[in-house]
Length: 215
Image (cartoon, rainbow, N blue to C red; front, side, top):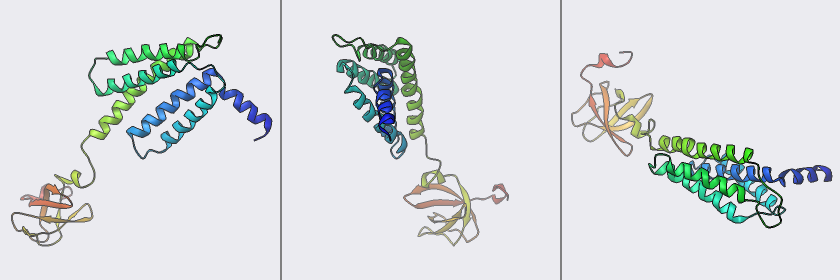
């Protein structure tokens, strides 16, 4: 990067509005990474944005009480996701974020102020992100698994070997699984999964194989 290009970039990120937005995006990214481990990209973007914002703060009259209020507002949004407050915590979070944003560059002798046209939409979008998006992520994590061993209960297949209480093999969706049955089954019997214990299935015979899909 040439000297002129580097200066232009530094001047850009030193803008108070840009520094403010970088801070918010950084907090979004890091929180999303913490709630969705392994996503990687949000965490990387969030980390880069926070580093750039802290670099910007070095040349700006930052009031760190305002920064702490912004962090408090995010904590209130997170609590709104965890606790049923009928929107009270979210509303409080928006008020605290607006107050913190107004104070962020409010230091003695400073003429730098963030515009309400930047602060109000940012506070609203932040509340929307945490209360709606994060809540959807948490609900998705709590949803009953539809894949893997736990998602096999109720699945129908065929006995690949004779099956006794001592064990045997069944074929489900083209995969072989270890299984046992309270009643002995013969190879080729149509079965349904009743329970899962580790990687071992408990199955029973289907009395009416014609109800199998394609049967």
